[in-house]
Image (tube, rainbow, N blue to C red; front, side, top):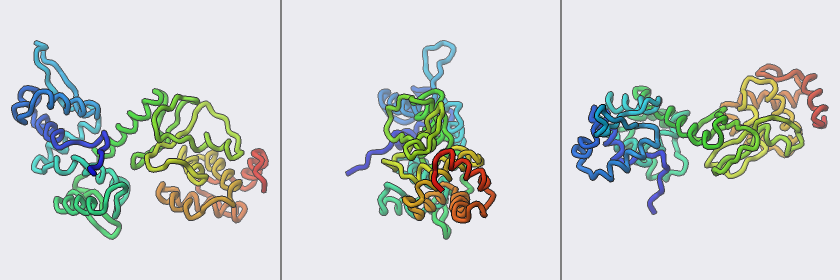
Length: 317
């Protein structure tokens, strides 16, 4: 069965259209002739590219003809630069279909396996991308070749655009606090109507459910297509992600960690902490509780401050 592609992926024709526009071919009539496609098909694909924030339409002075250009957005500008600088590369065979999904997964760290993509498909794309020099392989796994920094920057900005568009559909006042791999932590006005799937209430907005009472004018959500529900360990980590250098949020996380210590899966907690670049912080927090404050640093409270808060929140010693 053919896999259904995400809305953010490109078709080969979309990339071919963008290559024409990058070559200063802006007239719709010239685009149709260059690509030998019907007007309806061109319009359909240009509409999809506009929804992705990549192209915009303009009319000349006489207003009788419509022209298309790259949008002013960061990801659109970077994609144009990529297509112009490396015009000899067949980007329609790289960015189209599952190709961009595989590249997205290489953004933050090297990969040996790719989520939701079959081993055979992953191997085929990895082989082809390596042969073209787009990605490299070392002891840690595959990653984007530093020579193609424009590609990496485009993917980063495009991912930001997609997530920001999604988050703004919740509320114009909603903001992204942290993001990676199409997952993000979102702060939104309290009781915002959430009609989209995959938004899960978390962090300080979930502490009340565990008996740690907090009050705020905002709700915190975690957006992810991978997770259908959140565990105690996730709530602890998401609280830390709100503001990494804040003793306040570290203290909230410590309170929940202390209160639910007997239920915590430390292996899962440490594995997820490492994935979120919180490994050092979580290890320090565990040692802080085990040694009753002998472990200091990394934005930890003093033991006296923590004990006072624990009593205030009725977290038993």
